[in-house]
Image 1 (cartoon, rainbow, N blue to C red):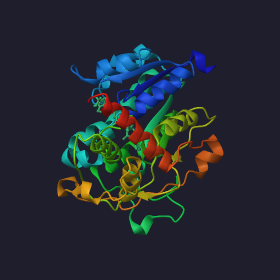
Image 2: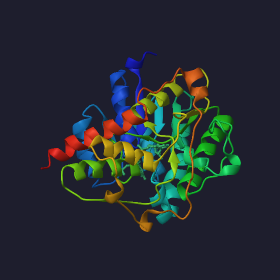
Image 3: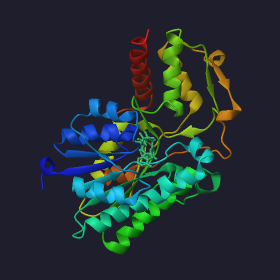
Length: 332
Ligand code: NAP
């Protein structure tokens, strides 16, 4: 089947990756369907305006009957399960909700696919995460975590995602479903929610430059992350579902940087070399357990999928600061 005849269903359409993926699939000629939850979701109108070609379907990952209905309406060839409680800090404050949505929600979506796709034609992508690895010294491979690395999640989010990862594999092995778990390291960009540290920084940096705020409050600055650009990562998701056989893949940059390094580059974009006077550390943003270092090894995805990233770390920070400056300027 050519891409022009394909139909895709995306959960998490209102999130960062949902937007990038909807645009990519639309460009490839897919008919795109997206699940939206909540009767007063403020992102409904924004999503409809930004992506007029997306068919929105009311459904919630915790309501399996709504997911069956979504499958019946969309009749998709590909399902991308991106919906989740996705913020690590928030997951410590709402651990049961995180288990219901980020963990059991995957089972609900898989069951909806299994029950409605008797011929096993549907291809399913699960948005797994590097947070499943945990970053502790004892299990950290020198070249970075890969598809065979040991898991040791350090948050309710990571634990729930690990369930999603294994139930995706289990349904592949048990029911002959085309299920893929994409283990993605952090990816950011202009669509990232402002509650996430990278966007929180670039948003604040733009506002500091424009005189709209005078400092930013952050948690620990030493954790290291493997940060890529979300636009590059959704291309990898799509490639995972175009292979002859389903398999699991890591997407990462193979580089790791501290939050301090992110601050260095972001403040340099507005001409500030010493950012310390502008940054206050607030224990409220520190977590009960932290992941020290995340570094991924993308060799398999590069070799098998021909996947490559186009935006490097300085390019990512620049793109985000420039975007936030443009947005904030219009508010003055
Ligand atoms: P995001 O911006 O936080 O988006 C999460 C999406 O999930 C939103 O559209 C949200 O909808 C939806 N959602 C939450 N609860 C729901 C429910 N009960 N039913 C239906 N939808 C629900 O996340 P993202 O950055 O795009 O990430 C996409 C996926 O990849 C997530 O599963 C995330 O955990 C995973 N991931 C992300 C990264 C990363 O660095 N970005 C790395 C690895 C894995 P509302 O608008 O209704 O809130």
